[in-house]
Image (cartoon, rainbow over all chains, first blue to last red; front, side):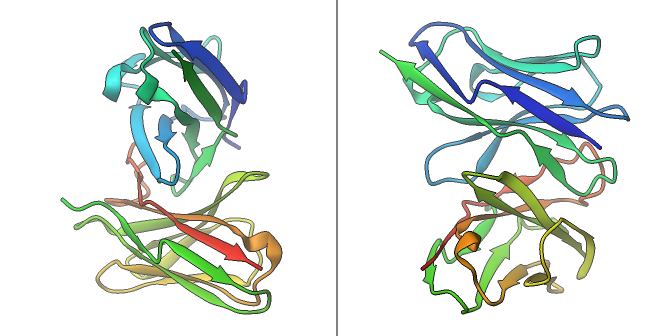
Length: 113
Length: 115
């Protein structure tokens, strides 16, 4: 079954510092991977998705992620953190049937001044 | 296009009652999925509907049910509420739902509190 593991339930960075949120996947078929962000009291917003077209995927708000098959990873990065980036981030993998997403437990990003 | 809308946004019920939540997908989207989000279990898939048919169901008891109407709007129902049903219920829509590269677009959720 397809699954993802997010390493680190809480990550704290200073404003202007590099953001790195880790996601490793397990999949018996070529995975389709997604990163979503959730702000307090809101739903999930898609940041970016990997669909095998390119291993480096650029998303909204300056985020990008690199698919590394050899490491079974899909880490999310942003060169310079903004205060507005503070939120919960979820990595997800599409199930083999295609009907659903399996989500990681989420990583809460704190950005300090 | 308007996004996914969910009503109501907040709901308080007592144990044993039943509740119905509503979701209107993005115009033109035919697939609607429901997820439950809790602090302990995270985001879990409930079920998915396409063209008024349930195509897939997660590992939830039969107290959780849903349906989809001809205009793609969907409702989910929880009967005999338990304290553990307190959660944020998220609805997501996508064009077809089964294309593995399809994006699921999420609504703001309905926060259900069971007392």
